[in-house]
Length: 295
View 1 (spheres, one colour):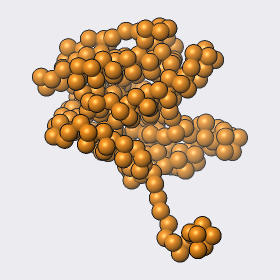
View 2 (cartoon, rainbow, N blue to C red):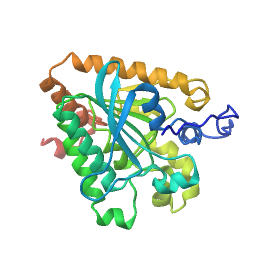
View 3 (cartoon, one colour):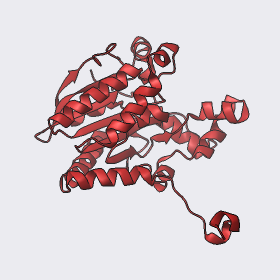
View 4 (cartoon, rainbow, N blue to C red):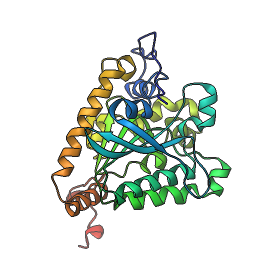
């Protein structure tokens, strides 16, 4: 099932010096030879056994969930699927899940909670699928339900953004105790093309939007939206997938060990506070009008 394909050229997308840094990172995050979530799953975990269907509508081909082993411990792993060939990409909607995909993921998470197994999610998607059918079947409700349920799962949860983490579609898999992000990944509320279309009615201003969104790893880390940025091999993970898998695997093992050292109640409290405080910023009282301070 692995989706990795050797990059014979051994190089990144053309990212000349004339390109803004934010857009260069975007191209790296979207590199067609970049390892996808299932590549990480099959390289880091063993004996992956897939779970199919949401027991309500169908089995979304854009989402994969299953039991696996991680350093001798049974765990649950979840990741979206993009596909390498055109046929696979169309069938998987280029990695954007339908509501039944998110419901399947939640079903898998509840199974993991029942048996006390840690949950690992891997994310590389531009957003949830925006089709009419998806909206008719409750796309918004499915995402919202995942946000609620993930916030109170009584098992350790670790999310890793491996490429593109877009909008609520990514967040529906990322309300976790630890959110990790690869160095050349991006994490944003909206794609730069969509942002440019809304702000300036011109999708061609995507590079300007990318810079304004500040969705690169350093900015996202500074805002508290992720807990760690994992380094990548020179030029990006597509140049040395094995090294990228090892770096991610080591980080996952360390974070799981840290989470195992605290009580479940403390873990839940820290998870709540982390998301409650994301992206907050403060100004001094001197900058606040007197009417706003009650003076």
